[in-house]
View 1 (tube, rainbow, N blue to C red):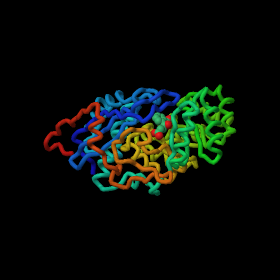
View 2 (view 1 turned 30 degrees about the vertical axis):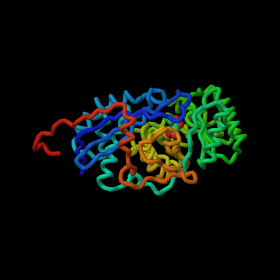
View 3 (view 1 turned 180 degrees about the horizontal axis):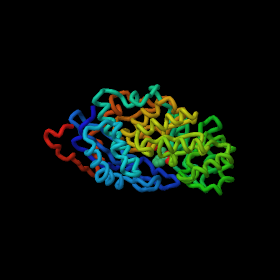
View 4 (view 1 turned 135 degrees about the vertical axis):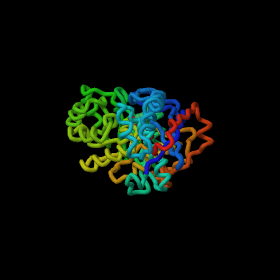
Length: 378
Ligand code: OSB
Ligand code: MG
C-alpha cells in the first residue's frame, strides 16, 4: 500500500569540514547539504541530497536542487497520490536530469516505507554481508602533507586509499605514496575528468605504479575516448561521472570504456537505480564499488546498505563521516579493523540527532501537499 505524503520539509544544513577537500574540480571547505523529510500519517522518512554547493562535479548544486525539488518534483509527487518508493522515479520522470534531487526524494520515501514495515534498507536492497571494507578518498595536498594524511589512514586500518589527481599532480604524489607505503597498499586515483585523450602517454606513466584503477580520467560524455584510453593503459579504467544510469553502465561496458564502475546513488537518480547498475555490473562481470559524496551519516548509512550487495567487490568510499566532518548528524559510524558495520535498523537504520541537525540548520521550508477533496479517495 502506498504512503500518503502530507508534507515535505526541505532543510539546508552547513557542516564544517575538518580540512578542505581539494579535487581537480575545486575545493570544499564546508559541506552544505540538503535534507529531505517526508511526513506521512505512518511516520517520517529522511533523505539527503548529495549535490555540492557549486555545480563543479556535476551540473547540480544545493540551491538548484532545493528549487527543483520544491518547484518541479513535489508537485509531481502530490499528483501521484499514495505512493510507493518504486513509484517515485516514474512519477518524477517527466523532469529531465536532476538525479541528485530525485534521489533525495526517493530516499526519503523509501526510508518512510521501510520504517513502516520494520525492514532495513540493506535487506531490502539485497545485502548479503553485515560488514563492508572501507576505502578513503584523500584530497589533493602538497606531497609532505599527503604522506602524513595517508600514514594516518594506513594506521587507522583503511583497506584502500584513493588519491585525487589532475594534470601536473599525478605521478609525483603516486610515486611518493608507493615509495613510502610499498606495493601492498591498495591504491587508486581519481581524476574527475581532468585529462584529455592527448594526455594518454602521461597517464600511461602511472602503469608502473600498480594502481587498482584510474577513475574518470576523461570527460563525462567521452565514452569512446575512455575505450581508446583503455587500449593504451594497463591500469584499469573506472567510471564515475559517466555512469548516470543502468543503461549508461551497460553502454560503457559494451564499448570497453571501463573495467570497474563507481556506483553513487545520487548520480544515478536513487538507490533503486543504483541497485540496477549493480545488477548490470554483476551480469557483465565488471567490478563495482560504492562511491561517496562527503555525505553526512544519513547518506553514508544508506551507502553502507548498498555497499553490502554481493557485486560490490572492491572497497568503497565509505569512510566514516567523522573523518571529514567536525560534527555529524548521526551517532558515529565506526571503523573496526578497516570495516564498517552495515546498519540493520529499519529504513536507513541509524538515528538522526535532532539537536545537532537543528544547530547546523541554515534554512527550513515546509511544503504541504494540497488539500485532498473529501471522498476523492487516496
Ligand atoms: O569524484 O568520487 C568523487 C567527493 C565529492 C564529489 C566527488 C567525489 C568525491 C570523492 C569521495 O572522492 C569522497 C567521499 O565521500 O569519501
Ligand atoms: Mg570520482
